[in-house]
Each structure stands twice: as structure tokens, then as C-alpha cells.
Figure 1 (cartoon, one colour):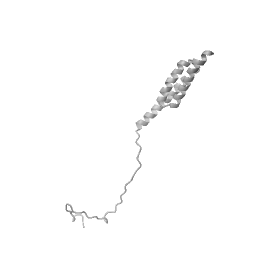
Figure 2: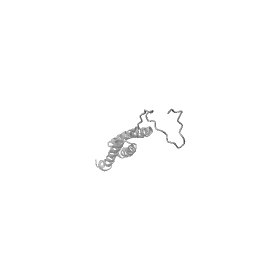
Figure 3: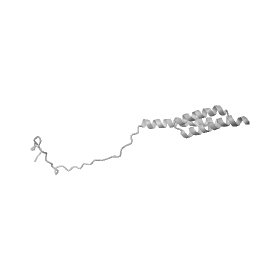
Figure 4: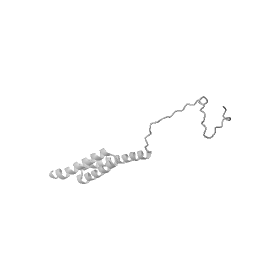
Length: 114
């Protein structure tokens, strides 16, 4: 049967010509790709970078408050420590808060007796 000779009628079954077609088909399944937006990753990196600078400043003020003006520099170190924690530098911020609190406590309760 040639292609031009056979014209199927409406509703008639189509003959299967398995010997004429030698094709191989396959379905490929890929692992799902995680969807991350580059902008979101950049925002996280920028946020962490800003937090590190702020955390460094906060810890410097807190350490300085151990020697000079404990109430003023200690409070500034605590406030900047909270800002640094909010921006992604949790470790530096926590240390700045802790050192600032210790400096204020020493400045208020212990230094007046010396």
C-alpha cells in the first residue's frame, strides 16, 4: 500500500505499519531545579555585608566604653549591636551588646567605689 493509494474513510480504523517506522522514543525525567532568584541572593549578601561593618563599629564602641565614658559608648555599642544583628551579623552584634551591657554595669555599680 502506498501513501497516495490509501485514503481512510471517516470512522475507519487506521492500519498500523510497524515495519515502516524504526524510531525509538523515550521520556527523560530530570530532577527538579530549585528556583532561586539571583536578586534575592544578592540582597542577602548585601545585607550581611552591611551588618558586618555595623557590627565591627558596634564592638569597637563597646570595647572603647570599657575605658572611656561607659554609659555613652556602652549605650551606643548596644544600639548598634542590635542594628548589626538585624542586618545579618548575629555574632558581632551579640558580642557588642554583651560587652556594652558589662561596661554599663561596671560603670554604674563598680567604678563609683574607686
